[in-house]
Each structure stands twice: as structure tokens, then as C-alpha cells.
Image (cartoon, rainbow, N blue to C red; front, top):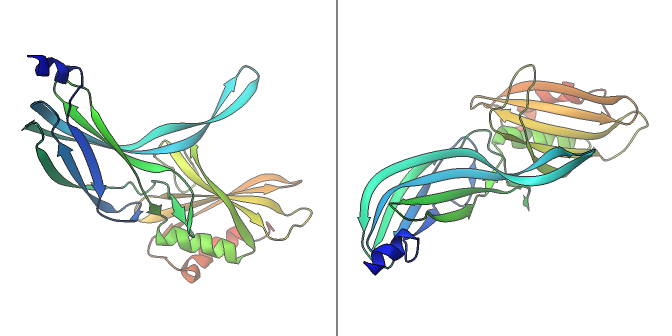
Length: 253
């Protein structure tokens, strides 16, 4: 009787650990995980697992007369896996699952540097108990099309300054994003002219077959401007994306 009560308030509950079976992931692709459930001090009924891809995104809010910027966690994707399992004290249960990353999930690793924070959150649904959970950081690299575009911009006289994950959605003439956040790559020119660009902000929207590219140009005296295009995902080298990107870069430096 005492152990049943302890389980109901979450003491002695089962634990969950999720193992990623690949070192690096790419948005739009499937990936495999192994979930290890370890029984606690008492017998417990497990009703299912919940998975969520989450990210830290920059958000702006108006507080009084001031605009405040802060970071918040956002859910990009979620899955539920139902099952009915009675796990005994100290018992270990292992299950494998295959999940699909949304093609718009932000990258976290570029050119040898960490550029964002995205993770897989795993929750364990325990009958009459508190959820056990596990949090695993994901290493996600840009798609080959995105890498080709970023490399071409770098080769065209711009230096990657930083990358941010921003709350909100992206809309251009050719495409619109779907996740609650998007990724911006900020470039600065290696040489400056009086009326040239002070900064380029590059955003990608991948729908699985094409990659939308939105470039925001920040000019010193001429104000901001936007240019966009869509590139087939079969274009995965700097030469194959050149005819799409070079016209956007013309007359902005």
C-alpha cells in the first residue's frame, strides 16, 4: 500500500533515456532512436511515450514603451506513441523508433561551429504518476542545397557573422514557412562602400523538393530591401545554385 502511494506522487517512478543512433542529422530526413525505460521501485503501468523536437528562439515583446528581446522554448514537432506496458521494479525495456525531421527544422552546426540549440524531448506517460523525461541535444547540419548557397555567398565577398533562430514565420512571393520559428544567417561584406550593403540576412524555407531563399539587404542610406528565389533541391553545388543566387547579389554590394 505504501509503495502504491509513493508511485502515485512520482517517488520511485520509472526513468527514460533516449539514445540517438546517428551523430549528425539533416532536416527533412528520418532518424532512429532507442528508448531505454528503467523500472523504479514499484510496479507501474506505462501508457505511452511522447516525443517533441524543440528549439530556443529569440522573441520580441512590447513591455510598456520598451521592446524587450528574450529567448523561449518552442515546439517544432511532436509525436505520440501509445502502448500498454506493465513494468516491474528494476526491469529494463528497450524500444526503437524512427522519426522524421521537418525540412524546416533549423541547423545547429555549420562550418565546425555550434549555431543554434535544438533538442529531442522524450516524455513517459505513467498511469497515476508524474512524467519521466529525457532531453537530448541534436546536431543538425544544413541541407546540401543550403550549404551550397551559404558557400557561394561567402565566396562572393561576404563573411558569415552569426546565425539566430527567430520566432515567427517567413513569407515571400514564392514560398511561406510553417514552423513557429525560422533561422537567419547574417553576413557582413568584407569590404564596404558608401551606398552598399551593411549586412545580408539569409533565410531558407525547404518544402522537401525546393528550397526558398529570402535575402534581406540592409543598406546604410537606401534602407532595407528583400530578394527571393526558389531552388530545386537537386541543386547541391555552388555552381548549380549560382544562376539562382548571383542575380540576387547583383547591385547590392
